Length: 102
Image (cartoon, rainbow, N blue to C red; front, side, top):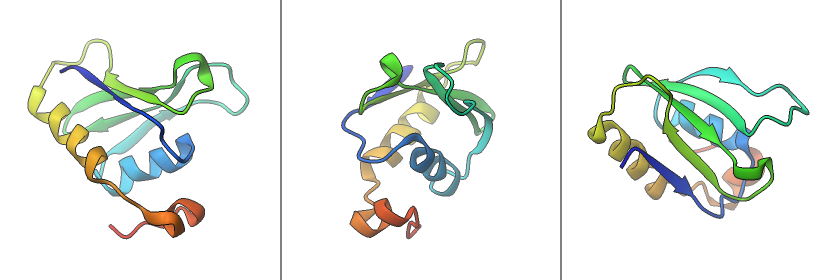
């Protein structure tokens, strides 16, 4: 696995970015400019690997997380990120406020 999809994500990319920062402890390295038509919302670095968060067609409820071009493939790191997303459940209050119990 070199990428994975998050289907039916109930919140926007800003909540997803906070999850990446708070749950994974990753550093956001770039963000999409406001009102940009770019389908890449943000990039982040996790355990010395660069990842990209992409939204197909720029307007859907699913995101693809994949290794940035030129990054070495490490299946353990990708699996760890995938597992964190599968286990994440902010609850309705967390989704509404963006405040997560981590």
